[in-house]
Image 1 (tube, rainbow, N blue to C red):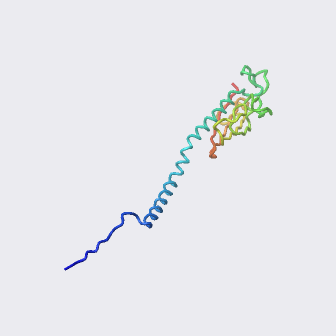
Image 2: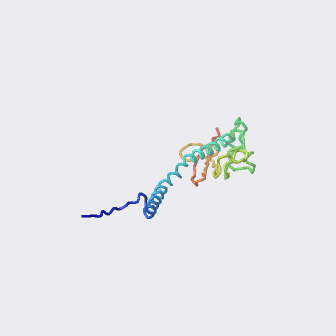
Image 3: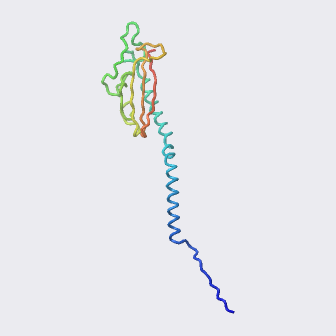
Length: 174
């Protein structure tokens, strides 16, 4: 008896359909992974932005607090406004001078600009940052200080992502 044995040969590669299905599955997986990581990648840069905003806010505060309390205060705070025999303190805001000539705290009131130094030159590495400053007289609240004896300085740094960073300090006439 003669029997014929039928043999089948299997191919050792992938078919075109299997490759297309694999590509589709990998594409979907890559899209999901990217969608999950995207917000965390954006948030990873926030500490750097926050640090720059803090440095910028500190630089402006140091500049402002280094100025005289008032236009009528003596240079070097030898005399103070509102002292006996001295002119009254003011809260007028800027006297119309250029920022390089700001000499007292009031001059910074309503200053809105891109990040610059005291001479008006743009600060390096602060593209996209803007600064808004308001100066108000008096502290108010529970602190017993006269309206002409303290000025509140509020600085808002707007970062390149649109986030605002607030800084507040007080300059007193003492």
